[in-house]
Length: 297
Image 1 (cartoon, helix red, strand yellow):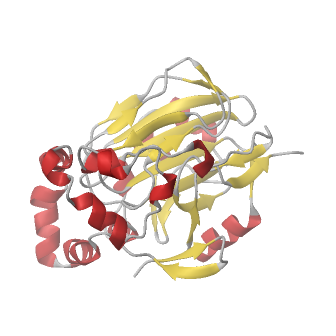
Image 2: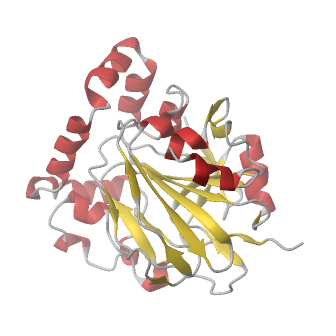
Image 3: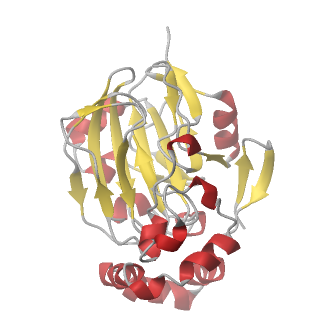
């Protein structure tokens, strides 16, 4: 059971997990863990399922998925009946009106839809993965010179569920460097898995880049793949001019994670988000939603 805080209703809710029974069995039973290590975490497993989600045979899953998880089809830029396969639906674009963005340069927005955890004054060697589990930023990006820039900074962990909109965006105007790719496994990023696999983010396939933000200084973007994520697709133009809210990329099928690191004294996170994170709860967030402000002395 995964409980999260709904910011709009100001109530705690239970997440309806796609494949919840399978996840619990895989990450909580000896037999499941053995199968996980032998097959499920491997690239070939996710690639095969990704190929199925790219095929016409997967199209029949779309209608039932929308019904089971009460997904709002009115937000879709394209009629879901026109999607050729499940991955077309999964990586769908939304209407501009579906995710309004505050253009105020001092407002910090969420880079995507998902469940958000935030941490301030981070220890680079003990960044919280989930309560009781930590990892090192040095191990996450394998670049000590970049990692040290974010000492005592702020970390945002946005977990995208399979039911979420799966495109991620820039939180400010600026210029983004090229993407660095790190090979890895394909563990689930669901809290069920995070509680059972130490250093999970540092073990999974991931990509990272430095975004030179106009108003929040340098930001480290990290995208983490997961079970059945066929690909992490970067759609931005490296070194090109970026506007606030522009698309950075998208994930193909599967739950995934976007992690942002800010330098010290660059952002002030909204108090309600900090409170829930300190209590150990994720907060449900939409892309473009205000989550903080520019730090002022």
